[in-house]
Image 1 (tube, rainbow, N blue to C red):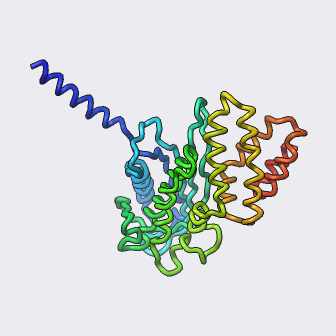
Image 2 (spheres, rainbow, N blue to C red):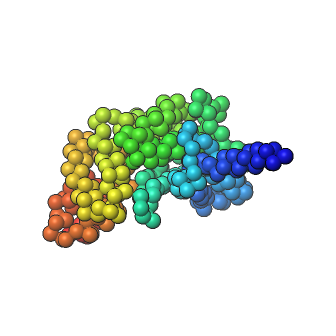
Image 3 (tube, helix red, strand yellow):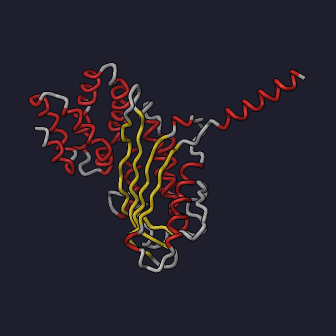
Length: 309
């Protein structure tokens, strides 16, 4: 009898321990529709949209790895709908943010902070968002575009996170994001953001440049900045700061060889505040050479660095 009770107890504990595992992402979602609220749309649709995106991001299993609840990657999605197209189709922008905890601290470092301005999709009341990697374009291009965009950024976040823990550790997930680009939904000129010919600052170019040997130094620096520097900032603050600043010259070389690249700005969208914070801890006379480098590479945030002179 005791053996039976013990066996039952072991099974229960095993089952409970399995429930402690979690999905990879912990995503908070907000949908704004102020600009289209007078276009004859039921407000409940947007509440359902918000819930559906939240469920999709947080319950889908994105990798084969096991995550503890405390290991989930925190991210935020803000969708700002700007126009109602025909039927149940909409367009707007998507702001995606994600962070990574820094070892031995209570600080989370940003790994992505990007606004996608080419967002079009269809959504119907009470719809469930589903994604099939083997049929990215689905049966209805507009309906398939939302899960394609969400999956694309989910894999991008995972790739950046894995790259920060091991050299090129995120390649598998960048390839998955690139697969979505290559098989993205199409519907004339209505669906934008996936093609090289549409401009040089869209989803195509982000993954294309991440996977390109021309930008390999950015990925190498990404690992150095996070695993070798930020994760050691508590025990070796001076060495860690020097390691971060030393790598700026290599980034600048990439910038010179690839002027105006979206990947460079994508990088600084997430990291400009950290660079400014690191420089602020240095004596003013020592900041000058790094301010020069940063203002050359990160023009949109030039004032942020100039304020440190």
